[in-house]
Length: 477
Image 1: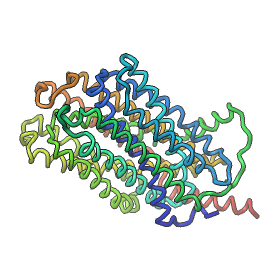
Image 2: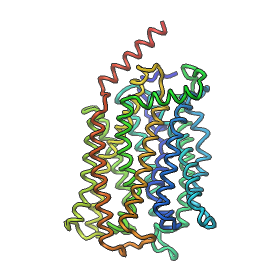
Image 3: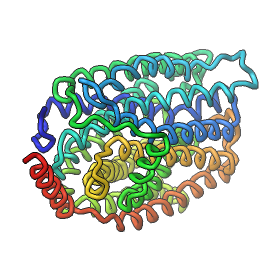
Image 4: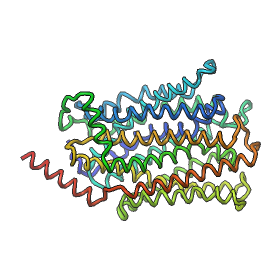
């Protein structure tokens, strides 16, 4: 068995990060295309689409802590996590394909179809992502090394999502004789789902196989038999830890913001910024450039200033760059929308805002791993799976609320169903910008205030790791 305090080799970081491609494909699909597909292509009311996606997220979020707890108690010669990573990916791939193949014959039952398939996809993603992320505190106890591993997860996760975004815009969702607007091409969504399902399953299986030799060993302790009540008590005890509650609160606000932004982005591009088809070619490239920038910035920043400070400042800086274009547009200081100058400026501000926001997300999820030792000091148990599940619980609930908010903004702004770009009234466009920008502003400030209360810093963490190591040494004597 490899000690958790060892430096993690680059190849393990790469294989570990590869697994997050699965989550990136799912997250991008749900956030960028699913509302548009079921609303503007299938014809389901935006509020019903948002409601189905939000309900699916809440069901999945409830399942997450249970999956995390079960993975903590899994006891095999392949360790706690690998069995999950080998079993779940293939069913997930098929479920993802079904999500983008809604039968036209369902009629009024399409809402139920969307709800059930969305729940299935999300639960299967959790069966992959929760055990995968739970490996980080097992791989290393080092304060900075955890951030390094996490940045690889984000790099690969965003890469997977952006590859599918790029393929969607440039290969699958392109105009043809029947569909002059590429984003409304129903056949393209079927191809998008087929390729995405194959990519999700393959990435997770490669990740599991690449880490197998490093993590495939019997866990240190066989879990004690426990009752259902005791299991839920352990979950509740972990998730109500003070540091966890603060971090989860800040994360919820951040993910509401992110979920709303991703979901409404195509509406903004089509109806506010009037992107050309060529602009959609460059958009994934801009986003990936942001992720690469955050990949190189996050570790030096957290080493210099600590995780809490970086999370706070990153969120506020991202908010400022994100809302500037809307403020200038509403005040009449923006170039003509749809032109090259307007599109270039949107991309510039998107690059800066996304870089700052991804730095915040990497840092905050790295902070989750630091709660493991704080909880272990109090309970005597290591519950990596439960804390990882708690983070995904928050992420999914926050994203679900964000998607629901996006649907409400679209509906309250007055954007009609199956609207054509350039034909939406100016007051509707202005309402869309105002509602969205105000909510981004409020959420970003709230998130910064909550992050400020997070109680764990580098010195606290290193002291706990040393104390736990000393206690284990005494016990082994």
